[in-house]
Figure: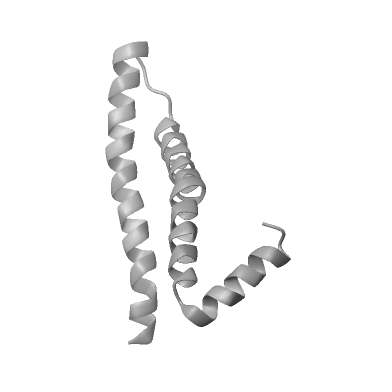
Length: 94
């Protein structure tokens, strides 16, 4: 049962990427066919890779920063941890 539970997020991710790839590949194929009059093999794959990369970049740059700031504000409210957190900021020179 543990193997199923551990594998489930991976399988859901792969399924989601596959369905997204199929939809995106059809969309890109139709757009290129309308614009250029032909198809470019592999363009759907490249487009999906670029979108996954940009999503990860956005998540780490913006959403990750917001999550860290939110967690820092949360830890400052804890009496014991706030002293440790402030000491950490001083130690790191921030």
